[in-house]
Length: 301
Image (cartoon, rainbow, N blue to C red):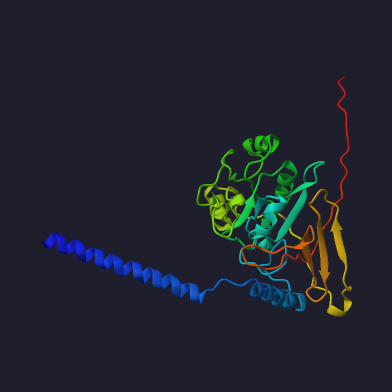
């Protein structure tokens, strides 16, 4: 009889705990509501305007990449590979928090591109959708002394990673060292279309911890950029558009916003936003490198 009473008591206590947990979750949800699209954009505009119109003073903990205050100053960044496929662009998560973003042609002459985000200060818990990286991206990651984080890659790149030419975490599990299910995972959620359920995502904060467990150098050997403040509003140009010559449905353009001193990014004419925060993707600086593919022959002596 006593045993049954104890069981009933445990069930009652368990039910009370479950109801408390649900109530607490709903309470937190009210305290921390998800930003609406309009609220996120308004917050971005306010932050960008303040940053663009405040005198710049170098900080001792400044990011080596952006020059802005950074609690993780001096730590090795992560170079995370993003898919460049057109259907994934509206779902780029965390990209607006990267200190530096690299986009380049991926499969010549198709025009397809891939994107890599260099994360030093910010380490979003949700980044992606990810894809493999080529040797070109690996070289850029090495230039920043960043831990390279692809989801697979071509045979040449995987061969180099297998030879341990550079610190890396392969989220596909094909080339050691690899991440675990905690750092690298496949996303299936209500806000991701069914067609993208098999796309890979990662947790940058856990990837950073994983790099430390693997024994990679903790401090960044990248020498950093020289930084200066923004031009005063009356010295900035009026308008302007920069179009990048990518081919076949991969058109990228930037429209200059004078008030914010930023370049608002468009993909195939559609404004791009960070899927995590809803904030506008609008870098402060753009570097364009135009290269030419040169043929060569090998002669046998």
